[in-house]
Image (cartoon, rainbow, N blue to C red; front, side, top):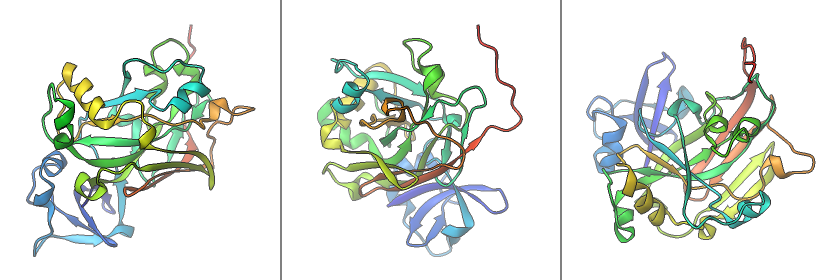
Length: 283
């Protein structure tokens, strides 16, 4: 199943299940998107459920309203090598805030403070059940499904310190979606991940090459923080980021970025400049 959050033409937000070229609304009988992610079978369309064409909606990120978004750095050996970083012994983690992400088809905003917004295509795991101290062998039971993530980074601010937070949380700097595909449809085979900039492939790899598997990450993260339905684990980006090109190539207004995940879907976003903002003078 494809579970989605979206806005209607009149501005109302809703959530539901995507079937073919239509989306069926479920918010009249299911209390929240988190509840739907926890029990996807409740989203099977029923007689009387309202629906509309996909062309009539604007996508929102298919994650919890107040989701924890835990991101994993250097989880592909190729990316660790291109950044000159030793492959970590333990997962390298940082967090994003939900308002740093827009839905598929919505423009990502390049902040006026810097021109160093870089792309990072990733596979994201969406949690489907309360998880705490989950053993690796049981981790699959806690996955609602998977979505595509443009975990874009403001490199200049990311490099202000050894902590990535400042470069990862600019408002509307990344994107997620267009929907969550439930784990029963995705299956257990590795997924190919491809990032394209203006139609040109920038990143291409497979989740078979993750240093820390989905199960390892769920077990490790749930050991120190409770995870809930709708929370997200961004599993890392492969090599091919703009920072490591010669010369560096960053996202700029007019660019079109695509992140495609096999058996999940295609996330796309344009890039625009932040409007009406005055750059902050940093010390």
